Length: 271
Image (cartoon, rainbow, N blue to C red; front, top):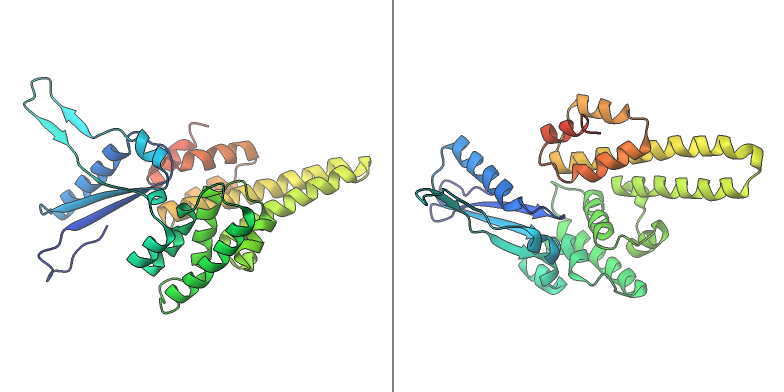
């Protein structure tokens, strides 16, 4: 949400929803957030509501906001500024603001050749470093975190080695990179166990399962922190206490449909 300064009387409040998965009710949910925000501040001025979709299919799934009475004596209708990132080019994002280079992974085809994607990632990194060098509010590691997550979301067929090569960056210095490295280690252990002796396999599998569970827990923890900000000790403890990796995976998938920590907590009672 962007609130104009007191002196900027000619500007409106701006609300932006970033939508990266299918949710047919997203306009209803976004409208409710805006209404609650205005009610809390007793604000009755003008607003601009925008939904930024990472893919056209997510916009296509969103149904219009329209609530009417049978007698047509009362109704609620909503109009939104809708943006699809894949409609933009990298150059257009940079022209708007060089800091938007973070969203560049959504401007290229999912079928882009790997060697060309490697070159693109290198270019994005250089542009991001230059764009954010004077911004003390966010570190370059955080920038790389976000860009890596966006890249994985857009190009989920990439493996760890390819991502390393694309960014020419020490992934161990970023949170997203730590998770990827952990996944890579687990995959390596699995391959090693298959090639090892029979008597050592069971012990290796057990170790791999435990480390895999820990890695998946960290990924879930990172995702909810990115989505909801700081989370309570209760949520951290409940995530860390889950022993079944499939349960953690299910929570990870369903967490994307939650708008806040309260909704996320309810998921624990549904699994």
